[in-house]
Amino acid sequence: MSKHRTRPLMLIALAAAPLAQAQEIAPQPASPQACTSVSSDAARLACYDKALGNTPQLTAEADAAAQLAKQKEAKSDDTRAISRVGDFFRADGQDQPKEEAVANAGRGSLLDRRWELAKDSKLGTFQLRGYKPVYLLPAFWTSDTNRTPQSPNPANSVNTPQQLDSTELKFQLSFKTKVVEDLFGDNGDIWMGYTQSSRWQAYNADASRPFRETNYEPEAMLVFRNSYSIFGWKGRMSGISLNHMSNGRADPLSRSWNRVILNFGLDRENWALTLRPWFRIKEDRADDNNPDIEDYMGRGDATLVYNKDGHEFALIARHSLRGGDRSHGSVQLDYGFPITNLLRGHVQVFDGYGESMIDYNHKATYVGLGVSLLEWF
Image (cartoon, rainbow, N blue to C red):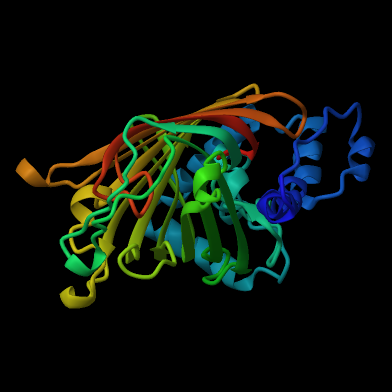
């Protein structure tokens, strides 16, 4: 393989290396002292959690302490007034067990480990963290290759069929960093995230192995810690983000949209559920590459993840939330399983519309097989 063809793989390895370090799997320590050799802050914290017995059982204990604190807060007005007078005269730095308990609800849960929600889980700003899964799928097959991408905008419709193979290589990089911590007291963090996924016709020698489609997705997110229960699920987080997604191509292949996304996260034991309704920021119709994209790539999605003993199943469902001819959606299933301490096998199955931006209104089934460095949790 020529030098210019190996360059993308080198870039993948270089970009993914710090992510793997930032999210490395914590060892099984014999004592807390063994954790001092762990390089990254996040993994070292996880190591201490294991050494000191901070398991999901302690997450339940943190939730119970927070619930008890809330119950104590719901007392008579007279008692509450006396309590507030006492708070007023409390010396700086004196323990405040009620506030501490509520602020640490959910410590060690799935969403807390990924978003640093609990007060004692905060790791500071400007550190590289995993966001969405990071994987390489050397085999990524589709049931229906989209050789003539179409759009209601005539300037964004392809009339000459492209020479494409049904099997290609797909990879995804994704990371985030916290830029502001505790914006409102001890809650409210601002994160900056970036996700890039590419579909490379690596086996298409006749067409000089082109990159068929790359999607770029930067976003800014304001995330809050929550503490509530609903049907046995613990509401851990809510947030709002500004998201841009495009493929960086010229017409007629250009596709893009901007969204305001709401985010609600809940978890319980080994499960995590994220609900994301969104609103597209409208563009001038004459310049809109994909005016009907919401009817295909949806107006919201739900992500359900099950993680246990190194195995992770993730189901992502999107829908247009419209009926009749405007009813479209997709389902994606990912399965990650351990191979080594830092490397996992990864299987991906997608069915529906919008596997990528260029295919936003194209329906097909996709099956991928490869490896991953990071999963959702």
